[in-house]
Length: 148
Image (cartoon, helix red, strand yellow):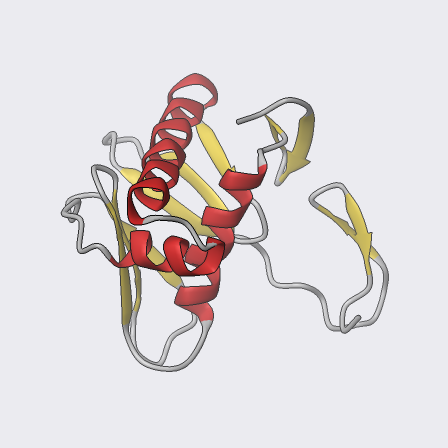
C-alpha cells in the first residue's frame, strides 16, 4: 500500500497505491455529493455517516455490517467484477487498520484521517477545507491554487 513518506496534518505516512486512492475517492465522492443523509459501510470496519443538512462526516465503528454499497460503487467506478471490487475494499480496510495500529493514524488522501480515540474506537477527522483567498498552498505534498 505504501512506498514513500508524505506529510499530512503533521502525520508521516507512506504514499498509497492506486487501489487505495480509488477506494478513498469513491468513498469521498459518494458521501460529499448531493443532499441528505448518507451512510457508507465498510465491512468489518465501520460506517461513514453524513447527516442531512451537514457537510461534516462522522464514523461509527459499531456499524460494521456490509450493505454491499461500497463494493457496488467500486465495481462501477473501476469496471471490476463484484469479487474484485470487494477484494479491493477488503484490502483497503486491512491496510487502513494496519496503518492505524502501526502509526496511530491512516491518511485518506483528500478526505481526512482515521485514528483511534482514547477508548480504542476508530474515529474520522475531515481534511481541512481549501482556503478561499486564492493563495497557492501545499496540500498532500502538492502545490495547488484554490479554484483551479
